[in-house]
Image 1 (cartoon, rainbow, N blue to C red):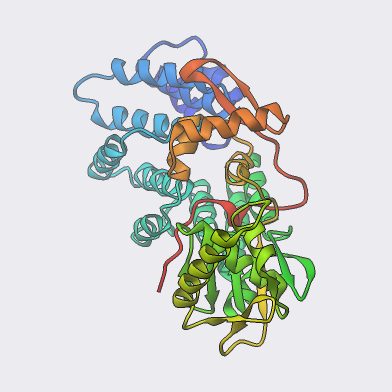
Image 2: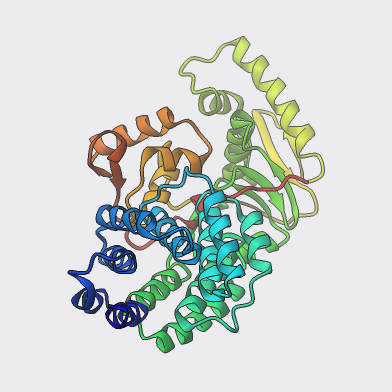
Length: 406
Protein backbone atom coordinates (compact mmCIF):
# COMPACT_ATOMS: atom_id res chain seq x y z
CA UNK A 1 0.00 0.00 0.00
CA UNK A 2 2.82 2.43 0.85
CA UNK A 3 4.46 1.75 -2.51
CA UNK A 4 1.22 2.61 -4.32
CA UNK A 5 0.83 5.81 -2.32
CA UNK A 6 4.44 6.77 -3.04
CA UNK A 7 3.92 6.24 -6.77
CA UNK A 8 0.78 8.36 -6.67
CA UNK A 9 2.61 11.11 -4.79
CA UNK A 10 5.35 11.17 -7.43
CA UNK A 11 2.73 11.43 -10.18
CA UNK A 12 1.02 14.35 -8.42
CA UNK A 13 4.34 16.15 -7.95
CA UNK A 14 4.87 15.83 -11.69
CA UNK A 15 1.43 17.31 -12.43
CA UNK A 16 -0.14 14.01 -13.53
CA UNK A 17 -3.35 13.56 -11.50
CA UNK A 18 -4.77 10.87 -13.80
CA UNK A 19 -1.59 8.86 -13.42
CA UNK A 20 -1.86 9.22 -9.64
CA UNK A 21 -5.45 7.96 -9.63
CA UNK A 22 -4.41 4.83 -11.50
CA UNK A 23 -2.36 3.86 -8.47
CA UNK A 24 -4.81 4.70 -5.65
CA UNK A 25 -8.32 4.93 -7.14
CA UNK A 26 -9.55 1.96 -5.09
CA UNK A 27 -7.54 2.57 -1.91
CA UNK A 28 -9.36 3.82 1.19
CA UNK A 29 -6.56 4.36 3.72
CA UNK A 30 -5.98 7.91 4.99
CA UNK A 31 -2.96 8.68 2.79
CA UNK A 32 -4.70 7.42 -0.33
CA UNK A 33 -7.74 9.56 0.48
CA UNK A 34 -5.53 12.64 0.85
CA UNK A 35 -3.73 11.93 -2.41
CA UNK A 36 -7.02 11.35 -4.21
CA UNK A 37 -8.28 14.67 -2.86
CA UNK A 38 -5.23 16.46 -4.25
CA UNK A 39 -5.67 14.67 -7.59
CA UNK A 40 -9.31 15.73 -7.81
CA UNK A 41 -8.30 19.31 -7.02
CA UNK A 42 -5.76 19.25 -9.85
CA UNK A 43 -8.51 17.97 -12.14
CA UNK A 44 -10.81 20.82 -11.09
CA UNK A 45 -13.37 18.77 -9.14
CA UNK A 46 -13.09 20.91 -6.04
CA UNK A 47 -16.25 19.68 -4.30
CA UNK A 48 -15.00 16.08 -4.44
CA UNK A 49 -11.52 17.23 -3.42
CA UNK A 50 -12.83 18.96 -0.29
CA UNK A 51 -14.84 15.89 0.73
CA UNK A 52 -11.86 13.56 0.29
CA UNK A 53 -9.50 15.84 2.20
CA UNK A 54 -11.96 16.08 5.10
CA UNK A 55 -12.24 12.26 5.21
CA UNK A 56 -8.47 11.94 5.13
CA UNK A 57 -7.95 14.42 7.97
CA UNK A 58 -10.42 12.48 10.15
CA UNK A 59 -8.82 9.14 9.23
CA UNK A 60 -5.31 10.08 10.37
CA UNK A 61 -4.55 9.06 13.93
CA UNK A 62 -3.59 11.24 16.89
CA UNK A 63 0.10 10.57 16.27
CA UNK A 64 -0.05 11.67 12.63
CA UNK A 65 0.01 15.45 13.06
CA UNK A 66 2.25 15.91 10.02
CA UNK A 67 -0.22 14.15 7.72
CA UNK A 68 -3.16 16.13 9.09
CA UNK A 69 -1.22 19.37 8.58
CA UNK A 70 -0.65 18.45 4.94
CA UNK A 71 -4.41 17.89 4.57
CA UNK A 72 -5.06 21.35 6.02
CA UNK A 73 -2.66 22.93 3.50
CA UNK A 74 -4.25 21.03 0.61
CA UNK A 75 -7.71 22.11 1.75
CA UNK A 76 -6.51 25.72 1.98
CA UNK A 77 -5.31 25.52 -1.61
CA UNK A 78 -8.73 24.25 -2.69
CA UNK A 79 -10.37 27.10 -0.76
CA UNK A 80 -8.13 29.60 -2.55
CA UNK A 81 -8.95 28.09 -5.94
CA UNK A 82 -12.69 28.27 -5.21
CA UNK A 83 -12.32 31.80 -3.81
CA UNK A 84 -13.54 30.86 -0.33
CA UNK A 85 -11.64 33.69 1.33
CA UNK A 86 -13.67 34.30 4.46
CA UNK A 87 -12.26 31.56 6.66
CA UNK A 88 -9.76 32.04 9.46
CA UNK A 89 -6.07 31.88 8.62
CA UNK A 90 -5.24 30.36 12.02
CA UNK A 91 -5.63 26.76 10.86
CA UNK A 92 -3.23 27.32 7.97
CA UNK A 93 -0.72 29.07 10.25
CA UNK A 94 -0.90 26.18 12.73
CA UNK A 95 -0.42 23.66 9.94
CA UNK A 96 2.61 25.58 8.66
CA UNK A 97 4.13 25.56 12.15
CA UNK A 98 3.60 21.79 12.39
CA UNK A 99 5.24 21.24 9.02
CA UNK A 100 8.23 23.33 10.12
CA UNK A 101 8.54 21.37 13.34
CA UNK A 102 8.64 18.08 11.42
CA UNK A 103 11.18 19.35 8.89
CA UNK A 104 8.79 19.47 5.91
CA UNK A 105 10.18 22.76 4.61
CA UNK A 106 8.70 22.44 1.13
CA UNK A 107 5.09 22.13 2.28
CA UNK A 108 5.67 24.77 4.98
CA UNK A 109 6.83 27.18 2.26
CA UNK A 110 3.81 26.23 0.15
CA UNK A 111 1.51 27.04 3.08
CA UNK A 112 3.15 30.44 3.45
CA UNK A 113 2.72 31.12 -0.27
CA UNK A 114 -0.98 30.25 0.00
CA UNK A 115 -1.38 32.83 2.78
CA UNK A 116 0.43 35.42 0.65
CA UNK A 117 -1.76 34.71 -2.38
CA UNK A 118 -4.88 35.15 -0.25
CA UNK A 119 -3.55 38.51 0.98
CA UNK A 120 -2.98 39.60 -2.62
CA UNK A 121 -6.51 38.65 -3.65
CA UNK A 122 -8.06 40.85 -0.97
CA UNK A 123 -5.68 43.76 -1.55
CA UNK A 124 -3.48 43.39 1.55
CA UNK A 125 -0.27 43.98 -0.36
CA UNK A 126 1.76 45.20 2.62
CA UNK A 127 0.94 41.98 4.50
CA UNK A 128 1.89 39.92 1.44
CA UNK A 129 5.26 41.68 1.11
CA UNK A 130 6.11 41.29 4.79
CA UNK A 131 5.33 37.57 4.73
CA UNK A 132 7.22 37.01 1.50
CA UNK A 133 10.33 38.79 2.80
CA UNK A 134 11.07 35.91 5.18
CA UNK A 135 10.88 33.18 2.53
CA UNK A 136 14.05 31.96 0.79
CA UNK A 137 13.08 30.23 -2.48
CA UNK A 138 16.51 28.76 -3.32
CA UNK A 139 16.10 25.38 -1.53
CA UNK A 140 12.53 24.86 -2.75
CA UNK A 141 11.56 22.39 -5.49
CA UNK A 142 10.97 23.87 -8.98
CA UNK A 143 7.16 23.81 -8.75
CA UNK A 144 7.16 25.74 -5.47
CA UNK A 145 9.77 28.17 -6.81
CA UNK A 146 7.45 28.83 -9.75
CA UNK A 147 4.61 29.73 -7.39
CA UNK A 148 7.00 31.92 -5.41
CA UNK A 149 7.99 33.86 -8.53
CA UNK A 150 4.35 34.23 -9.54
CA UNK A 151 3.67 35.79 -6.14
CA UNK A 152 6.68 38.10 -6.49
CA UNK A 153 5.44 39.13 -9.94
CA UNK A 154 1.90 39.65 -8.63
CA UNK A 155 3.12 42.03 -5.93
CA UNK A 156 5.37 43.86 -8.39
CA UNK A 157 2.48 44.28 -10.85
CA UNK A 158 0.23 45.66 -8.11
CA UNK A 159 3.02 48.03 -7.06
CA UNK A 160 3.63 49.02 -10.71
CA UNK A 161 7.23 47.80 -10.66
CA UNK A 162 7.21 46.30 -14.13
CA UNK A 163 10.97 45.61 -14.34
CA UNK A 164 10.77 43.52 -11.15
CA UNK A 165 7.70 41.74 -12.56
CA UNK A 166 9.49 40.85 -15.81
CA UNK A 167 12.49 39.50 -13.86
CA UNK A 168 10.28 37.39 -11.58
CA UNK A 169 8.36 35.95 -14.51
CA UNK A 170 11.60 35.06 -16.30
CA UNK A 171 12.72 33.15 -13.21
CA UNK A 172 9.26 31.59 -13.02
CA UNK A 173 9.49 30.34 -16.61
CA UNK A 174 12.81 28.65 -15.90
CA UNK A 175 11.46 27.01 -12.73
CA UNK A 176 8.28 25.87 -14.50
CA UNK A 177 10.33 24.27 -17.28
CA UNK A 178 12.40 22.46 -14.66
CA UNK A 179 9.21 21.26 -12.98
CA UNK A 180 7.81 20.11 -16.33
CA UNK A 181 4.22 20.84 -15.29
CA UNK A 182 2.15 22.26 -18.19
CA UNK A 183 -0.41 23.98 -15.92
CA UNK A 184 2.35 25.94 -14.19
CA UNK A 185 3.83 26.98 -17.53
CA UNK A 186 0.40 28.25 -18.62
CA UNK A 187 -0.02 30.17 -15.39
CA UNK A 188 3.30 31.94 -15.90
CA UNK A 189 2.37 32.90 -19.47
CA UNK A 190 -1.04 34.17 -18.37
CA UNK A 191 0.65 36.37 -15.77
CA UNK A 192 3.12 37.65 -18.37
CA UNK A 193 0.22 38.65 -20.62
CA UNK A 194 -0.77 41.32 -18.08
CA UNK A 195 2.39 43.20 -19.02
CA UNK A 196 1.72 43.08 -22.76
CA UNK A 197 -1.87 44.32 -23.03
CA UNK A 198 -3.34 47.77 -22.32
CA UNK A 199 -3.98 48.41 -18.65
CA UNK A 200 -5.34 51.97 -18.67
CA UNK A 201 -6.25 54.99 -20.78
CA UNK A 202 -4.66 58.41 -20.65
CA UNK A 203 -6.62 61.57 -21.42
CA UNK A 204 -4.55 64.70 -22.06
CA UNK A 205 -5.16 67.78 -24.19
CA UNK A 206 -8.44 66.27 -25.34
CA UNK A 207 -6.77 63.14 -26.74
CA UNK A 208 -7.12 59.59 -25.42
CA UNK A 209 -4.60 56.77 -25.75
CA UNK A 210 -4.09 53.30 -24.28
CA UNK A 211 -1.24 52.54 -21.91
CA UNK A 212 0.61 49.37 -20.96
CA UNK A 213 1.52 48.86 -17.30
CA UNK A 214 5.07 50.06 -18.06
CA UNK A 215 3.60 53.25 -19.56
CA UNK A 216 1.47 53.76 -16.44
CA UNK A 217 4.55 53.31 -14.26
CA UNK A 218 6.48 55.87 -16.30
CA UNK A 219 3.60 58.34 -16.15
CA UNK A 220 3.23 58.07 -12.37
CA UNK A 221 6.97 58.52 -11.90
CA UNK A 222 7.05 61.59 -14.16
CA UNK A 223 6.52 65.19 -13.12
CA UNK A 224 3.05 65.29 -14.66
CA UNK A 225 0.03 66.05 -12.50
CA UNK A 226 -2.04 62.87 -12.75
CA UNK A 227 -5.72 62.64 -11.91
CA UNK A 228 -5.83 58.91 -11.21
CA UNK A 229 -9.31 57.54 -11.87
CA UNK A 230 -8.11 53.98 -11.15
CA UNK A 231 -7.34 54.76 -7.51
CA UNK A 232 -9.34 57.99 -7.19
CA UNK A 233 -6.41 60.20 -6.31
CA UNK A 234 -4.49 63.22 -7.57
CA UNK A 235 -0.74 62.69 -7.66
CA UNK A 236 2.59 63.97 -8.83
CA UNK A 237 5.43 61.47 -8.51
CA UNK A 238 5.46 60.37 -4.85
CA UNK A 239 3.04 63.03 -3.64
CA UNK A 240 -0.46 61.52 -3.49
CA UNK A 241 -3.74 63.07 -2.36
CA UNK A 242 -6.38 60.38 -2.06
CA UNK A 243 -9.97 61.32 -2.90
CA UNK A 244 -11.28 57.75 -2.63
CA UNK A 245 -13.78 58.76 0.06
CA UNK A 246 -14.62 62.13 -1.55
CA UNK A 247 -16.52 61.28 -4.75
CA UNK A 248 -17.74 64.82 -5.39
CA UNK A 249 -14.24 66.27 -5.11
CA UNK A 250 -12.78 63.55 -7.29
CA UNK A 251 -15.38 64.13 -10.01
CA UNK A 252 -14.53 67.83 -9.88
CA UNK A 253 -10.81 67.08 -10.21
CA UNK A 254 -11.35 64.67 -13.08
CA UNK A 255 -13.64 67.03 -14.99
CA UNK A 256 -11.14 69.86 -14.67
CA UNK A 257 -8.27 67.51 -15.57
CA UNK A 258 -9.98 66.33 -18.75
CA UNK A 259 -10.57 69.94 -19.81
CA UNK A 260 -7.00 71.14 -19.13
CA UNK A 261 -5.51 73.45 -20.31
CA UNK A 262 -8.98 74.87 -20.86
CA UNK A 263 -11.62 75.66 -18.28
CA UNK A 264 -15.09 74.26 -17.55
CA UNK A 265 -18.22 76.38 -17.32
CA UNK A 266 -19.94 76.48 -13.93
CA UNK A 267 -23.20 75.04 -15.20
CA UNK A 268 -21.34 72.18 -16.93
CA UNK A 269 -19.51 71.40 -13.67
CA UNK A 270 -22.78 71.40 -11.73
CA UNK A 271 -24.43 69.09 -14.26
CA UNK A 272 -21.59 66.54 -14.11
CA UNK A 273 -20.62 66.73 -10.45
CA UNK A 274 -24.11 66.89 -8.95
CA UNK A 275 -25.82 65.01 -11.79
CA UNK A 276 -28.47 67.68 -12.00
CA UNK A 277 -30.39 68.60 -15.15
CA UNK A 278 -31.48 71.93 -13.71
CA UNK A 279 -29.01 74.43 -12.28
CA UNK A 280 -30.07 77.04 -9.75
CA UNK A 281 -28.39 79.37 -7.24
CA UNK A 282 -28.13 76.65 -4.57
CA UNK A 283 -26.17 74.42 -6.94
CA UNK A 284 -23.77 77.24 -7.76
CA UNK A 285 -23.29 78.00 -4.06
CA UNK A 286 -22.54 74.36 -3.33
CA UNK A 287 -20.12 74.27 -6.25
CA UNK A 288 -18.17 77.18 -4.74
CA UNK A 289 -17.94 75.31 -1.43
CA UNK A 290 -16.67 72.13 -3.09
CA UNK A 291 -14.20 74.09 -5.22
CA UNK A 292 -12.82 75.61 -2.02
CA UNK A 293 -12.41 72.18 -0.44
CA UNK A 294 -10.66 70.82 -3.51
CA UNK A 295 -8.37 73.86 -3.65
CA UNK A 296 -7.30 73.29 -0.02
CA UNK A 297 -6.62 69.57 -0.56
CA UNK A 298 -4.57 70.16 -3.72
CA UNK A 299 -2.74 73.25 -2.51
CA UNK A 300 0.70 71.56 -2.83
CA UNK A 301 -0.04 70.11 -6.28
CA UNK A 302 -2.31 72.52 -8.16
CA UNK A 303 -4.52 75.56 -7.93
CA UNK A 304 -8.16 75.70 -8.98
CA UNK A 305 -8.50 79.09 -10.60
CA UNK A 306 -11.67 81.00 -11.36
CA UNK A 307 -12.12 82.07 -14.99
CA UNK A 308 -14.64 84.33 -16.67
CA UNK A 309 -17.04 81.42 -17.22
CA UNK A 310 -16.04 78.80 -14.66
CA UNK A 311 -12.93 77.13 -13.26
CA UNK A 312 -9.64 75.69 -14.52
CA UNK A 313 -6.97 73.43 -13.06
CA UNK A 314 -3.52 75.06 -12.84
CA UNK A 315 -0.74 72.57 -11.93
CA UNK A 316 2.15 73.72 -9.74
CA UNK A 317 5.65 72.66 -10.84
CA UNK A 318 4.11 70.46 -13.55
CA UNK A 319 4.00 71.07 -17.27
CA UNK A 320 0.99 68.94 -18.05
CA UNK A 321 -2.12 67.34 -16.58
CA UNK A 322 -3.09 63.78 -17.47
CA UNK A 323 -6.20 61.87 -16.47
CA UNK A 324 -5.39 58.20 -15.95
CA UNK A 325 -8.60 56.25 -16.59
CA UNK A 326 -9.24 52.51 -16.18
CA UNK A 327 -9.78 50.39 -19.31
CA UNK A 328 -13.42 49.81 -18.33
CA UNK A 329 -15.58 52.08 -16.22
CA UNK A 330 -18.90 52.01 -14.45
CA UNK A 331 -20.25 51.11 -11.04
CA UNK A 332 -19.51 47.42 -11.51
CA UNK A 333 -16.03 47.68 -13.02
CA UNK A 334 -14.21 46.48 -9.90
CA UNK A 335 -16.45 43.42 -9.63
CA UNK A 336 -15.67 42.60 -13.25
CA UNK A 337 -11.96 43.11 -12.55
CA UNK A 338 -11.97 40.40 -9.88
CA UNK A 339 -14.11 38.04 -11.93
CA UNK A 340 -11.76 38.60 -14.87
CA UNK A 341 -9.27 36.09 -13.43
CA UNK A 342 -11.52 33.33 -14.80
CA UNK A 343 -12.17 31.72 -11.40
CA UNK A 344 -15.55 31.16 -9.77
CA UNK A 345 -16.18 33.63 -6.91
CA UNK A 346 -18.81 33.67 -4.20
CA UNK A 347 -20.50 36.98 -3.42
CA UNK A 348 -19.07 36.86 0.12
CA UNK A 349 -15.50 36.54 -1.23
CA UNK A 350 -16.09 39.45 -3.62
CA UNK A 351 -17.41 41.56 -0.75
CA UNK A 352 -14.33 40.72 1.35
CA UNK A 353 -11.94 41.59 -1.48
CA UNK A 354 -13.74 44.86 -2.27
CA UNK A 355 -14.24 45.83 1.39
CA UNK A 356 -17.95 46.39 0.88
CA UNK A 357 -21.19 44.72 1.92
CA UNK A 358 -22.32 41.44 0.44
CA UNK A 359 -25.66 43.00 -0.44
CA UNK A 360 -23.94 45.72 -2.49
CA UNK A 361 -21.96 43.07 -4.36
CA UNK A 362 -25.10 41.00 -4.94
CA UNK A 363 -26.90 43.96 -6.51
CA UNK A 364 -23.94 44.51 -8.82
CA UNK A 365 -23.88 40.82 -9.78
CA UNK A 366 -27.61 40.79 -10.49
CA UNK A 367 -27.20 43.82 -12.74
CA UNK A 368 -24.24 42.29 -14.57
CA UNK A 369 -26.05 38.98 -15.01
CA UNK A 370 -29.08 40.75 -16.47
CA UNK A 371 -26.73 42.41 -18.96
CA UNK A 372 -25.17 39.07 -19.85
CA UNK A 373 -21.71 40.01 -18.58
CA UNK A 374 -21.47 37.39 -15.82
CA UNK A 375 -23.06 34.05 -15.16
CA UNK A 376 -23.77 32.05 -12.03
CA UNK A 377 -24.14 28.40 -11.10
CA UNK A 378 -25.14 26.61 -7.92
CA UNK A 379 -27.63 27.69 -5.32
CA UNK A 380 -27.68 29.45 -1.96
CA UNK A 381 -24.24 29.34 -0.26
CA UNK A 382 -22.84 27.20 -3.07
CA UNK A 383 -23.66 29.83 -5.72
CA UNK A 384 -20.63 31.02 -7.66
CA UNK A 385 -20.09 33.74 -10.25
CA UNK A 386 -17.77 33.81 -13.26
CA UNK A 387 -16.99 36.13 -16.14
CA UNK A 388 -14.77 35.65 -19.20
CA UNK A 389 -11.61 37.80 -19.21
CA UNK A 390 -12.05 41.06 -21.10
CA UNK A 391 -10.27 40.63 -24.46
CA UNK A 392 -7.21 42.73 -25.18
CA UNK A 393 -6.96 44.55 -21.81
CA UNK A 394 -5.96 43.89 -18.23
CA UNK A 395 -7.98 45.16 -15.28
CA UNK A 396 -4.99 45.07 -12.92
CA UNK A 397 -5.37 48.73 -11.94
CA UNK A 398 -8.96 48.10 -10.81
CA UNK A 399 -8.01 45.34 -8.37
CA UNK A 400 -8.12 46.13 -4.63
CA UNK A 401 -5.03 48.03 -3.62
CA UNK A 402 -4.56 50.66 -0.92
CA UNK A 403 -3.27 54.07 -1.95
CA UNK A 404 -1.28 56.07 0.59
CA UNK A 405 -2.06 59.70 1.19
CA UNK A 406 0.85 61.97 2.00
